[in-house]
Image 1 (cartoon, helix red, strand yellow):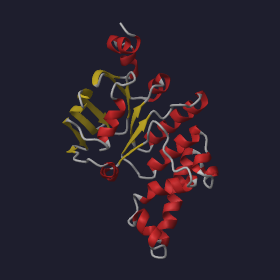
Image 2 (image 1 turned 180 degrees about the vertical axis):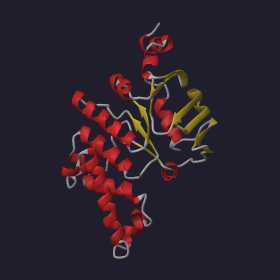
Image 3 (image 1 turned 45 degrees about the vertical axis):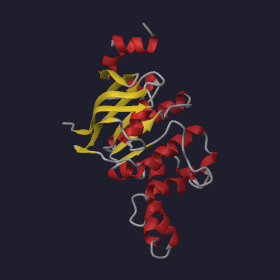
Image 4 (image 1 turned 120 degrees about the horizontal axis):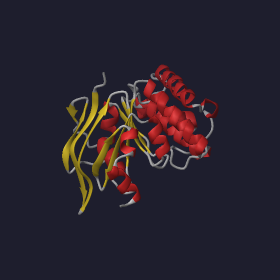
Length: 253
């Protein structure tokens, strides 16, 4: 039986006079893939920014494992077990692929990135463990052969995989993927879908914002449709595809 890991309750976000998220209610069950879809400007990424603490809600609340989140900084949400990727792949281009993963892993270490660099002899053992764990994540996403390459030299598809591997290095309970298939070709999108499925098998709950409807419908357990910041439909992929409100939002009346 699934249990609720995340709950958005009457969530609202206003920027000036623009209502980006409007009285949004949504529950996410543990060990599932929940996709949020909707037209451009529907408020999908704003929802992710609210969950991760990048911005504060205007109203409503967010509960993670039944506890109301007070986070207003992304690093606090990360410490609680929430990791994310972004619409535009964000890697450290001048660092190696492996070093990018190690940055994510340092957030789980007792020393942290700065202290381990200042006092290398004392933290040498932990640094070795971080490197080993980082390589495991690289292998998981199929990038282990590229470990020593500059991250900025990788093609977009590999950079998206790298960003996911870095997020996985944080050992998240909830992984938010913001348009992971954006810019990918058909083969790369298929590989991304397979990867997300394998992440779910690791008992990591996944939330997905995505415009590739074939990918969404193939991998999602639940789909929530938002338009103008409000939820207009929710259900299985088959249910939302037949919903007249969803058809109207995408195709017009």
